[in-house]
Length: 435
Ligand code: EPU
Image 1 (cartoon, helix red, strand yellow):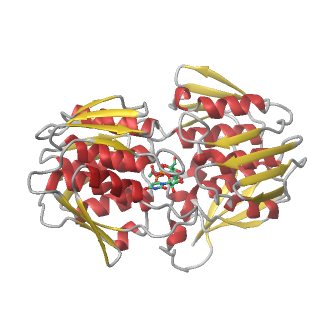
Image 2 (cartoon, rainbow, N blue to C red; image 1 turned 45 degrees about the horizontal axis):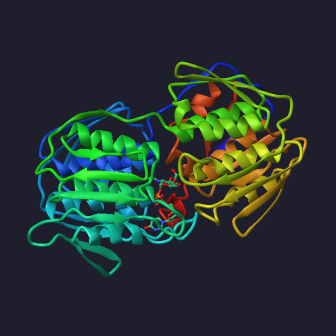
Image 3 (spheres, rainbow, N blue to C red; image 1 turned 90 degrees about the vertical axis):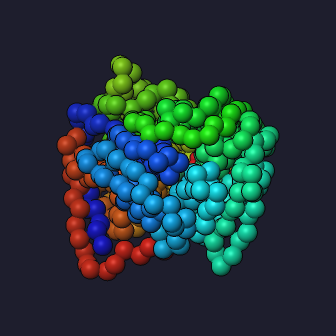
């Protein structure tokens, strides 16, 4: 298994480019199931999760050609409509083939994703949405079986809010299913994340009729079929935020290029409250660091509020800020895996009942730590860059799921970070490997 060895305390300089959005690319690749024509998807990041999604699509009869950052797809046969456990257990987002499959083939069998290290993560809202469109849903042997009625799916009004608010992938799934349903569907309490808008725009380029994506009410007028299209996915806002926070924690004026500041206003606002400026020029954002950031109170909520996927990295910055910070997690109340590892590096954090209290210390010290999920791993990397001495992060396969060759890119900024292979132990494809 690979580990990172980081010698902290180096000032970073220069610029780093942002990759395409993982969380946009995953559902967008799944819409290739919805047309018999060729699609070309651009700005696709080279990540483990994308590889897993491509494998799922191949199993479902989609032929794929991957050239650099471009993936070309075409449905070769419609024989198999089962997304197997072996693949969906590796990546929960595999569930986003449910809506496209049901829309295109009238049936879908998708493994239930199971538990996840960042929380329970049920899919009741996805199923509720499919049922509202008329699908019959059965759960058997760990699989969801969805079947459209004889006359096909039918548009309707669907309230898609759950106890934690809107759901990104449930909105995606229901929107895809409704695109080929008869009549009009209105999704109320739809997720407003930029990735939902990107998916809607891609579907529109394929001939779908969708209004209101990016707002809590999405209206979809069903069409008979979709055509192929070429689509470029948006830049990854979580990766952008991670790099900005890397600049803030190392107190380095690095420039992050190719990101979208308008997708990150909540993060930029929190950084400003902590004393870290972000200078915007076109698609470039330059960190204006301060001597020592100030403590802050942050609550994660659905977009456009502060994203849960940036919570762990923000905790790392709070760990070295002046004063006591409070982080409240309203999407995944148990998502505080970074806390225990940051404590090994000298942070003072208590986390319970969806809230972490972080008493800032002057500096962190290098230690041996373990990556546990994608974003917690990113937090450990940026903490390691700022810590005094050497940090050894094991199980970095978690970070490879969502960040492309992060160590090579950070090295170009002057970071001292190396990937080492410290044994032949296989990377476990367990529940802990998902997010
Ligand atoms: N929820 C339900 N029922 C459902 C679906 C969700 O109760 O049927 C709950 C979840 O348990 C959670 C909340 O609703 O408490 C929001 O979850 P959501 O469904 O929006 O999450 P998701 O769509 O499964 C995507 C991202 C996650 C990101 C969340 C929240 C992808 C592939 N994944 O997941 O990304 O944290 O939205 O923004 O888009 C990551 O990239 O590290 C990651 C975990």
